[in-house]
Length: 99
Image (cartoon, rainbow, N blue to C red; front, side, top):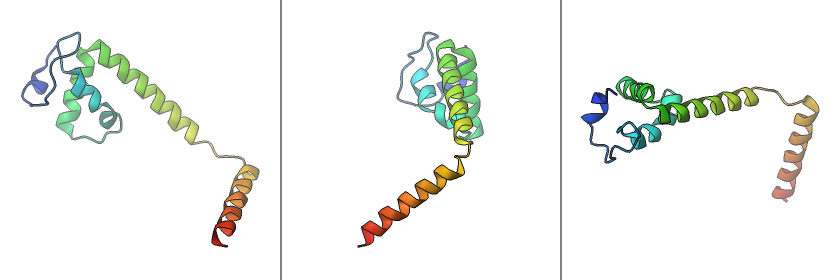
């Protein structure tokens, strides 16, 4: 494994992966990596770690699949009759709350 990018940083975590790498830090930053919410250098570090560590690669794959399924499920539009029923129920609750 090429762990040079992770070595220069004081993460407070010890090497804990089967490859002798810092899996704790990589896993803590996995969601930021998946959501592309980290800087380019950190992204490169995590990408390299995932490529080198089969344990973290497996976790990455699972999280990526779950994220994809959630995204796909959330893109469906509810039937219009259900939307109307929910909106009516919300308005009814609001009227009761205001009294």
